[in-house]
Length: 301
Ligand SMILES: C[S@@+](CC[C@H](N)C(=O)[O-])C[C@H]1O[C@@H](n2cnc3c(N)ncnc32)[C@H](O)[C@@H]1O
Image (tube, rainbow, N blue to C red; front, side, top):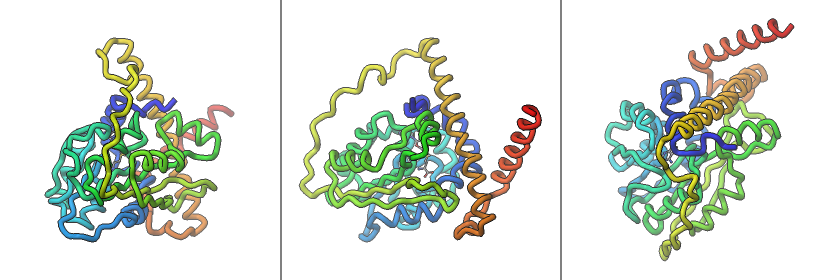
């Protein structure tokens, strides 16, 4: 179903999520250790590297990039002005360049950057293969593209909820898109937050190098008609509202799952639990969820 794997739906999803994204949501699912492990998969040696961060959002991944490359050589790009306004306020990112744009049709010339980074954005792209073709286009020959994204849950219920929300590719799909785009030296690293105890993998970072003799691929087939922007009729508007509401609801189910995962990890004294403690917003959300569950049980009984 993948209700939020569309550009307009993702726009409206982040219109509201951006308000509490940095405080409540992001630190549960995409942590500093995960960011460091992912960024370290790419090669940051070399002078004067230029970097583009695609789907840069509130700039959490960019804050890791500017620890490796001076901020004035980093370009942040996102389709959401609401997310970007938070990034623009961050002190470490003051010297970055900020551009609004679409990951599947990047507003950059061919061979512009040394590194391409995109974290947690591919799951909203209707045509992820096109986004990855764009990544190889905008980097210079010999440059690298690093993509970080979730993996499809193995548990049937988790998979059902995940796929109602957005795209959770398999590792084979990430690899196929990278290979078909023409990358070489492809490497993968699995990442997970400390609280995740699932038997399957949680997410991955994948990096590939643009060959020195890379030839642009032939133009892809046109995007199917139903995905093209049409006039905003009442029916389209209602469908958009329904998709954002139900898709968001499916996504928000992962918040209590993560919060209870945190508590379980802390009770077990699990390694990393002390490093990634819940902040006051997350504790407030946890208490509210517990109260809701108690009220629900009392109402049922
Ligand atoms: C989960 S956030 C990740 C933000 C950031 N990379 C981070 O590490 O926190 C996903 C971001 O992708 C952006 N996004 C979704 N679809 C996009 C598209 N087609 N083009 C550009 N940005 C997109 C959203 O607006 C959102 O800011």
